[in-house]
Image (cartoon, rainbow, N blue to C red; front, side, top):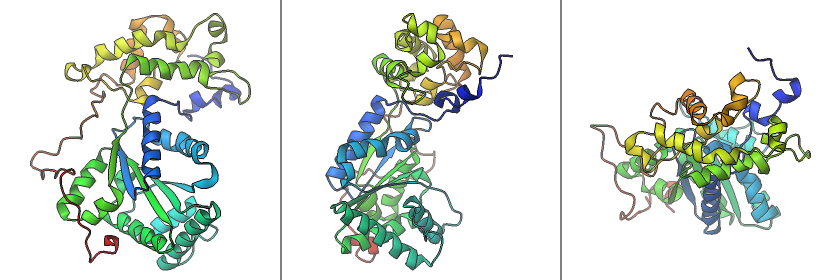
Length: 348
């Protein structure tokens, strides 16, 4: 059994699993979000298979990149949605207030909490000399009709104050099901508010993209902060100083992914970030991993296999998930005219 890593090393982001490498899919995701913001879209959703890197993008990158692009001009709030059974609008409003660090988030009636949230968003927009607020909701596949109706009320109240609220939902492919379900049930006002745009969060699609990601471990990361030491350099100082780079093994690693992928997926392979990160060496976890990338294809295959990637966990997420056999046929989004429901508060 290998010795436990030192207390200092145990705090490393790689060993804690508390980090996110900037990837081409994250770059596309951010570009899409900026396009929606600049177009003043009322709402859109980003979906993709689990473990693709969506939540890491939301947690580690979006707020930082928005701050770099817009500075203090764009009030931005992020919510990790929690399921409630049954749905509690009071609890949902409490969680929205908590994302603002509102001192009275936990007290008051539903009406008072909605009023506090409206005033807080409006004040932040005015202080930023802006007329727009962005709310990003992660794990949005857990949201149901009542959640969206609460957001409708929030948008309406802000509209009356001259503030535009853009809601961006991020979640699994179930969001695509929810979109079709709303169309089938006639809730076109919800689609017209919160699902005006859609975007796929994809995986790693090529050897070049894999090399880009591995290069970040080599040169674009740093720990401890201010040290100038990359993740690869930290764990393998002698090999790194002798010229070893993880990006150099991208060709053989991509070949392993291709060999393990099902034949039907091979030509349009997408690898989730979870399965890119798992083969990365983690000294102190397993003795063999410190040499995984110097032993060739066989060792890489063994480690990737241990990550369960061979069990059909490759992604061809360029298509929406199939509907259940015997279930309702999804109604296509495009080509259908959206008509707001005049009897619903979301309809104006």
